[in-house]
Amino acid sequence: MRFYSSIVTVLLSTLLLCGASAHAQKSSGKGAGRGEGMGRGEGKGKGKGSGEAKLSEQTVAATETVNVTLTTGAGNITVRGWDRKEVHAQAKEADARVELRKVGGAGVASNPASHVEVLISSKSDDDPDADESDSPVTLDVPRGATVFLKSQDGDVDVEGITEAHIEAVDGRVDMRRISRAIEATSIGGDVNLEDSSGRARLNTIGGSIEVKDLRSSDAGDFLKAKTASGDILLDRVATSRVEANTISGVIKLEGALARGGFYNFTTTSGDVTIVIPADSSFSLTAKVSEGGEIVTEFPLKYTSNTSPASHPVHTGRLAGTYGSGDANINLISFSGTLRLRKK
Image (tube, rainbow, N blue to C red):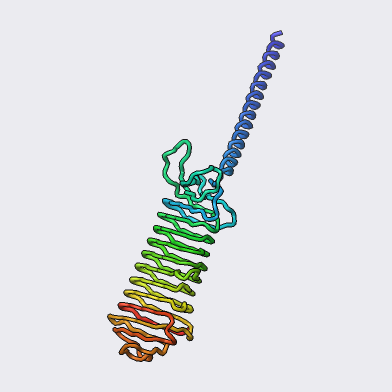
């Protein structure tokens, strides 16, 4: 009996130990599986959440000739003309907020806007006093629109509208297919205008100005370009009045002269080069000092006591005509060379 009791005791002890071990292993496996499942679920949740972020945008109905204003603290501005009678604005940063606000005027709120102010901010319902957003902005506006844009630190690119009035600080200004009027100023950036018409006033400090294919749509259209320290390059400019002024830079005009046009180019320490067709007709007044010179490939009829065209004029004044003298050209350089070349 004692021996039998001992065997029973040993068997019971063994069964208890095995059961405890099996229970421990089962618990351990269950815990590991639970931990792995939680890890996968958390990873998927995070990935899905970040992928659902949306950019801020807004659209309002507008008249064909709507005025649109936008001022940004920083960030590039892009404007495109389209055939819809709507103003559409989109901010490129997810934390930015776009608001299109109708300005002035009375009437039904649903009427198309004649003046829209574009506001870009990082404000939210939780933080109404947040600063302005530095997000890049894209605007789509009717082709008959006039835009007024200001950027403190960013480039401005405008295409396919009627009028553009732009101010940029530390940014480049590019404009194409503007049909009536252009006014652009940049501090620390270049200003470029291409394939446009109408009157244009371009200014920059510390940058260059380049104009290509500017046509005249009215008898009073003009181009006035001025830079403190940069080149002014004009190619195929057909407005009847062209003025260019730079303190330290090159001025170059290439293309046909407008009949009865007026051209006034002045530089302090740079060259002026005019490249025009051989059958051009113009009157010329050119003046240099401090070692500058005047060189012309056109055999002029002189109206003052100056050297013939085959010899450059140093430190002095040259006046003469070529053909019937239709256009008027006035060139001044303090210490550069004034050149008239045949194209």
